[in-house]
Image 1 (tube, chains in turn brown, orange):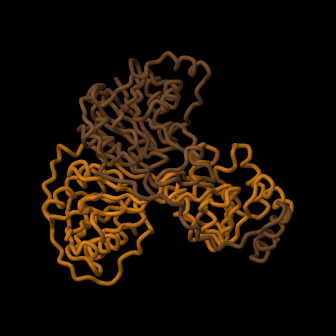
Image 2 (spheres, rainbow over the protein chains, first blue to last red; image 1 turned 90 degrees about the horizontal axis):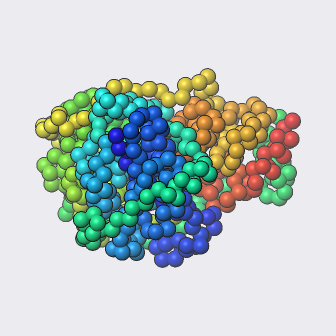
Image 3 (cartoon, each protein chain N blue to C red; image 1 turned 60 degrees about the vertical axis):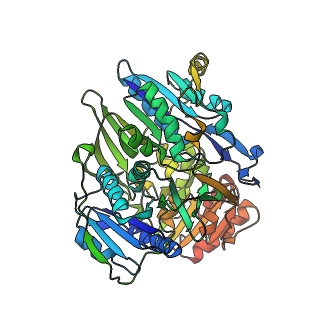
Length: 263
Length: 318
């Protein structure tokens, strides 16, 4: 059995930052493995550990820098990785869902996985749409926002819980092969061990460009254009307590006493 | 002139609030394009739902009587067929867990671009401009689409619910659902979490978020809750880490709470969290980041390190 897990390197923004055009200045960004994908990697590795002959392949769309992130997935137990990048993708502010689907579809065609796991969304652009669109394109069944997975590979079905709003889970049986988008909290992602980090250095990260995947620049043209980026106006009309922590606590305590909270 | 198809959502016999919001968003869009607003309701008691959705500004209501509950295979097929039948350009759905389970498939199936979690829309110029957030709500962005066809999912509570009685024609749409293409089966629902504490009943909540850093530090916030005779709750990351059980989680996927006083400690105020606590009477926020969105909502704020403020506050009440 082969599990393909999609991972993305996402940018995290410091508390104070400046916007330059439609980008945040690179000095204010730190890169990390997307939080949701971390849970997807863990789920894939747990499937591999529970079964015989399960291969976990991580795939990412990202520039050379993102190899650092994909090595995290390898250090946590993925067997090998594929990194998709091409000059045609340089300078694209917002790679739309359709373009990502065409890239990942080509990887799926090469890898022929039985199961694709993907984070529910990416922490930076937060589209949350690629997994389901990919499933539709490659003819796999799917489930979005999965927070519990019980895989019956022999029976060809994934028993999942989908986390709905308001503290309610939907319980669903999904036919394999399938794409599942994984919600945070489904498991406890492991830390990469020193041994894992060392082993990851020797694992394969296969680079693929558009040519390798049988695609052209026209296949990854984005229909969406990022035209503006700005800090949302603060709408705070809060009363701020100021001073030393003791003074702040004192003022807050007075307010709470006035409201009848404690004495 | 572009028609708009808005798709409603229901669960366990009730239309969800966002159903009325997609009607408002759809109407605004249709006003800008000069088109008609079609509203679809799929599955469940479609006639009763249609009656409820027949609000001011709706031009056509389409019912698809197929199954009791949401199934993405049915929804995707029905919406794609309605899109063709109504000759709509824009499809508007909730950016809900279920919306995200079929809208991207509809976009892919119809070869349309998809823009999700939209907080504002403008179709008054050429094409569509969508406003959405990035980087955990730290920035807002505008995304332009040079076309009059797209699938758009809208964030809840950004548009007011549609009101006023409408006089739309209600038509039963005979969708041709290919059952062999429906390969997932909903077998039931489960209440998540359980436990003996119902945070939605509490008068005073002391709520802890990611800023608490370590599991053992939760004890500090518990001490404060004890000193105030309050109940301890949390934002999502605390529950994801297994530091508190699910029944303590406030937010979109947790509990909606409306206490007299809500004290948010080390909580930045992500939109999913805000959805669960914005109805609190008095909101207090303690956070080191003065730009944290929680302060937009707070009545009282302290911009400082919780590890200095909380012990001082405990001392006040001991």
